Length: 146
Image 1: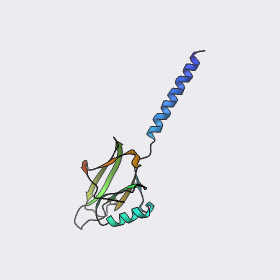
Image 2: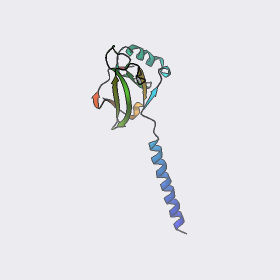
Image 3: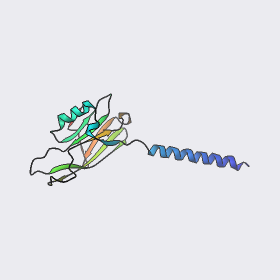
Image 4: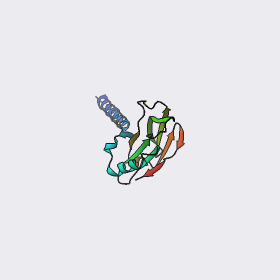
């Protein structure tokens, strides 16, 4: 009769550990693409001010969401047009590390060419600083506004 309480306890502990592990793996994404139309007025104004300059930008306000803006909308005829191939982010040691892979093409009809892309960053409570890597090399924001 004494083995039943032990089995129940073990089953309870196993279930508890499983719930904790699954709960930790279902955390909200660190970076999520959003549409320009979904931005608040302040962020839209910021995007409008940087739309004529290619680069990586951060829109950040204390009382608002943070947005990473990647702009490849400007290219001179005959030059290679850059585009965002992939982006991912993770928080490590209170640092948000954003990895951007960009490629280029001279085919201006290439469907991978997207002008301005906007990404909502996770809560600033998760990190203290941001590092950006473009094609494996650390870089910086071209501008920060908010």
